[in-house]
Amino acid sequence: MGDAFILDAVRTFRGRGKKDKGALSGIHPQELLAQCLRVLPKRTGADPNDVEDVVIGVVSQVGEQGSCLARQAVLLADWPQEVTGVSLNRFCGSGAQGVNFAAMGAMSGQQDLVVGGGVESMSRVAMGSDGGNIDGNNELLRKKHFQVPQGISADLIATLEGFTREDVDRFAVESQQKAEAAQKAGHFKSALAVTDPETGAVVLDKDEHPRAGTTIDAVAGLQASFVSWGAMTLGPNGETLDEMALQKYPQVKEINHIHTAGNSSGIVDGAAAVMIASDRYVKEKGLKPRARIRAVATAGAEPVIMLTAPTPASQKALKKAGMSVKDIDLWEINEAFAVVPLQTIKNLGIDPTKVNVNGGAIALGHPLGATGAILIGTVLDELERRNLSTGLVTLCIGGGQGSRRSSNASDAESRPVDGAGIKTAWLDGSSQAVWLRRPRGGADEEPSYSSGVAAAGALLALDATAIGPCQTRLASWPPSRRPDSPFHSSATRSARGTSSA
Ligand SMILES: CC(C)(COP(=O)(O)OP(=O)(O)OC[C@H]1O[C@@H](n2cnc3c(N)ncnc32)[C@H](O)[C@@H]1OP(=O)(O)O)[C@@H](O)C(=O)NCCC(=O)NCCS
Image (cartoon, rainbow, N blue to C red; front, side):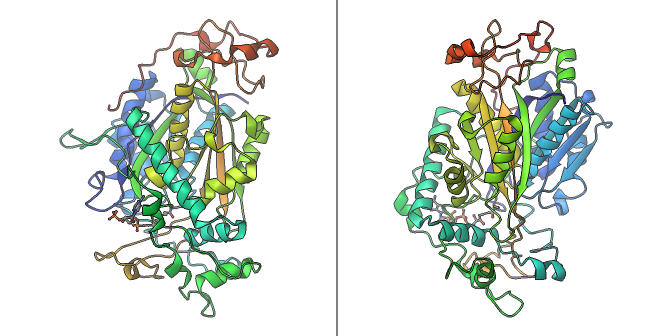
């Protein structure tokens, strides 16, 4: 198997996903992605003529996000017309899957330069717009697996495992505080300012969803969002959604609804693209990668509870990489709902100070199809900033919990109504994880890794930013510096860290 290297990862700032109110709601989703694509050749030195495919996650593939968005964005970006594009849907794991497929292409030796990524404009193409409803409206499937909206699943996990409203609210406030601190410190400066394609004016140059100064009292006062959903009588015999969920978990008497607008992921617009190259391409072109993707994995879970699979997905990825939880320096566990990272941290015994260190989707938002690719860039930036080497990105995966809000946004109007106003959610019980490794050490130093796993003899081209304090570990690590390594070549990439194209 060959290696898959990340040449660069770009992401737009995220705008609130409210029609006419969010800063990106006037921008077509193709354009969001195209703006990411346009900067990649400049940042990496790679030639777009060499790109063999653009693999893009998009969840709601209708209307403006239909018609193979990936290919249309390639054309919009003025990339060569020979470059192909493909759109995929793995629900909230779509953006990560785009990168995974790109990495697999490079690892397999079939492709040398591939872009993976994702996009979602939730303001323009609302969740559930594809009309697939809970289960593709398949009555036979519904008899086998009666799936419920993911907010109910999140509340069910909390009920089963004893996470309280205080636990999830505290986690949410920390997400906001970490995002606020990161914004103030300029940690997101590598993100892309989005411009109006007609005028060139910058329409968004910071993440719009975080609420600076969020207090525990403020979030504690918010009403639980999924009580009314759980009370909807959508079961085959008039059962409520809560009752249908509890048929699978009879040990629970009642679901304790604790997730709110304050501790659930925000509805936002955004895009991300990650350029992946094979070792052959990197060597031939003298490029300097930022990281290597070591392992990718997906895992399924019981489809009613369905948000629990970041644990097995991470375990699978770690096993493939021959590593364990303690070898991971930084984690990005998508904050679809606060209970998801909390449960994953508990299950895997992760040090919570290594998780979502700059805040997550509760503060910054979760543009469904894009988030997985966004998180890869996020963790990579932070690994470089802290001179660390290993990161793991994982997301729970659900389906399109659709909400079409009427103009009067009252609680009653935002309830799921099967076939009408709001589409009920559908979720599949799966998850995925991407495990990254970036090199440490300076150009004249032997490589070192926090893990000490000697699987990366080729990782000799090192970011200048990666010179760090880990050299003591080299004594027990026998790196075989390869003089012929492509990573000894001087980098042709232009500097990263600019906030616009
Ligand atoms: C939970 C959910 C239904 C809430 O939707 P919403 O009501 O539109 O949420 P909003 O972000 O607009 O917040 C509503 C109100 O809550 C309050 N609020 C939200 N966050 C707050 C915070 N941190 N502090 C104080 N108040 C807050 C505000 O009053 C806000 O209204 P405002 O924006 O006019 O000030 C929605 O965010 C959701 O569905 N999230 C999950 C998405 C999902 O399922 N993704 C897939 C995961 S698998």
